[in-house]
Length: 222
Image 1 (cartoon, rainbow, N blue to C red):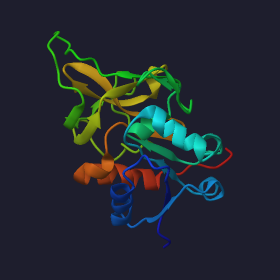
Image 2 (spheres, rainbow, N blue to C red):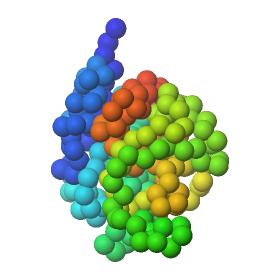
Image 3 (tube, rainbow, N blue to C red):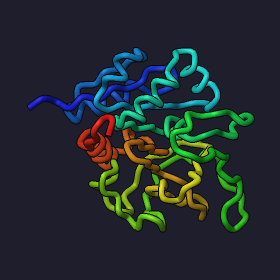
């Protein structure tokens, strides 16, 4: 049986080694590239990301990858954004001014509030392990998403100062609570998925999430 294949976009703003190692641990053949033609023919694609939103978008534009990523999404290829990569899927971000994103999932990226739900100061960035909880819209129905083989309450590892707010609440797959506030932890729209957390740094739970992404099937041009 042929190993599953996954292509990780190399645009200078992602922790490529740990993402690659996690997928290879799962038995996948991993390609790391910025070549548009290769990306467009890949069976599944990962957009990693660490650092600042505007710089990441600049690098994608310099490599002529923004249109390529949009084509990947349109043709039905499973696409997974990780951490900053998830935020890049949105329309725009308020980090260091307003900056346009890829526009694949309508919505904004805004700062995590500096105060808890009870008005107490809280540490920013949000760093550490936190539980995934169902949103009111999906009630834990994570079928056909990378979360389909984990249970509500399992914990994953976060490092971020900004959070995504999809326009459509149905695009919020899972949240986490930080300072009593709900933060989008995972989002999805059709074949497009995003994890605010780092599955590649989230132990066995993270590996199950990445394995589910490898297993998800979509028909291109469907």
